[in-house]
Image (cartoon, rainbow, N blue to C red; front, top):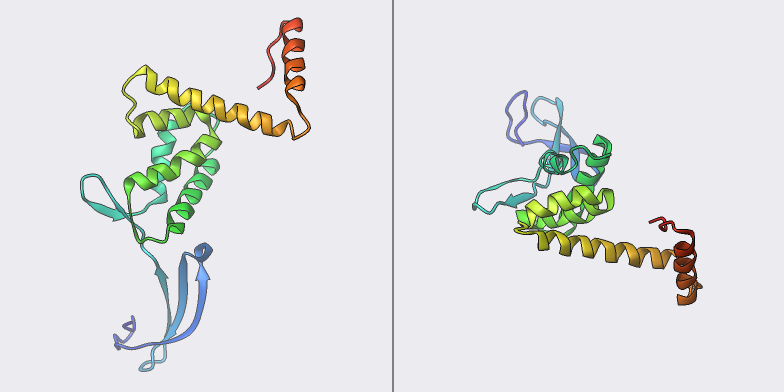
Length: 181
């Protein structure tokens, strides 16, 4: 590491600390020639290989801008988007590879987006997975409903029986209202 003051080609590390949630290392260095101190930051670059063959550094802001379009008109805040982008970055970094395909980034976006807003998820999935017809949407909606029903059954707890579900359905039908979802 060259000293930024005297351009000497060597420096001594005085202190090292983790920074930015552990994704970077901040090093305090001292030049043995002039004695001045300076700080460097080391980060691991995560490279995304695009379909075109080009590669670029992973960017949370690109994740946010792509998801923001799907969330247009939905009750999703900028903080929600920032947390989603952080979650996506943590997921792709956890794979342990310095390079990953853009497809893997898209897959990492789908899960957190589904939890955040189902409509935004459908919008993003329709573009990302290149839905070509109504059946593609219907299949994805059926999958979302099945997962929601499974979650609702899990929320009823282990003590709920089929009789309990039938009773709830009968009670709802006799009162003419729809059950809350």
